[in-house]
Image 1 (cartoon, rainbow, N blue to C red):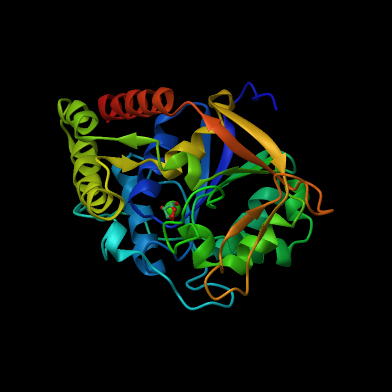
Image 2: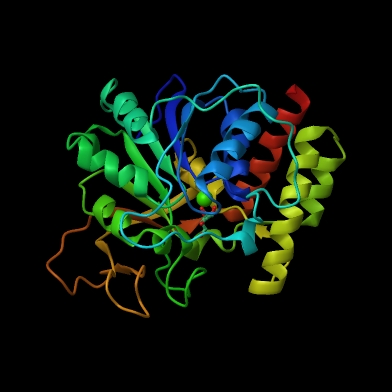
Length: 319
Ligand code: RIB
Ligand code: CA
């Protein structure tokens, strides 16, 4: 898929969330992207916190004008499932941001997604980095949506490694597996960036120190939000640093050459007590189900981390 000569129009469906916040800043720092709006969804924290975080991070990045729409505050069928142990109750770890001068728009995120995509068929890239509740409902409300996207890039799923939300399932799928199943079987042009890959795409204290050398509120925010995130990674996952799950997924929109993907059929376990939310890829063609996604199998994590830091440094210098 060739990149357009003008900036790519991107909608970010997100549950900010520390790594979501870093993805928002990366989008603001990247001239290849025209960030049209945030569609906020329940997930890492309660919807109300996530909406406030989205507004405040946009304002931190000098983009308080970008619309933020509140979406679904719970999964389609399962009970709410948040991750305060990973992102803090506020959703941004130890960071405290000045409140944005802007408020969320009155339009529901589901309606915003439909309106934005259907106004420019084939031109909008939807990057979804939270539970897929908003996206699934938008597809149900507007059946033409899936076929009108330029691309749907999704951070989620655990295919060949253990889950991070349950022994088998990755958080974004586990939090709303029914929504994920609806989206994966929608026929949309989906690229999945799985936990298998992003687990190893990490920044460390050394990288944070590089940003702090520049000083300023953005560097301080990245340091304070990731300090909480890194403590969790050390205690719960046993490694130093923290995973840039959502920024890595965003980068696929404008630097697709960082990744190698393969077509595969993916569906979601919905009923197993132990396995609900498990993403099941038919790698060996054991079923008659046709491939429905492109799954990232290789990714230049080191190259991306340098790209991320360079872009955030540029945003700091621009602020
Ligand atoms: O499993 C990681 C994903 O779940 C990331 O998008 C993180 O922000 C959480 O939403
Ligand atoms: Ca997220």
